[in-house]
Length: 104
Image 1 (spheres, rainbow, N blue to C red):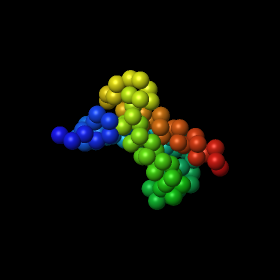
Image 2 (cartoon, rainbow, N blue to C red):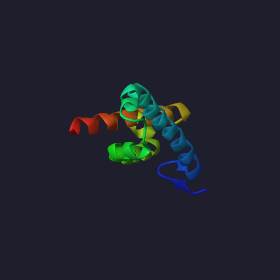
Image 3 (cartoon, rainbow, N blue to C red):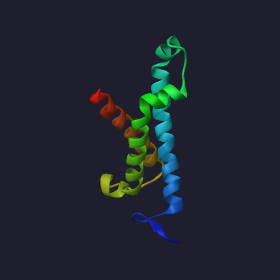
């Protein structure tokens, strides 16, 4: 089977990317719980409003997740597994969020 970026096959890449996406979703959900009182005060959660406010964050996080899954061994020195992929998604999301909030 053909390999995609470094030594991962396409199926392996998609598998670890899914774990990375779960980490990102966990990070976003934790942030939504943190700001729940403010969200309910202003009329509840709206995916449209959230995407308008966090569109660049999502795009940058997905790009960083692709690079993180593809180059985990080179970036961290550890082997790629489900746990490292999950934490890569969660920490990448928080890092991108901090960078985008710093710009404001």
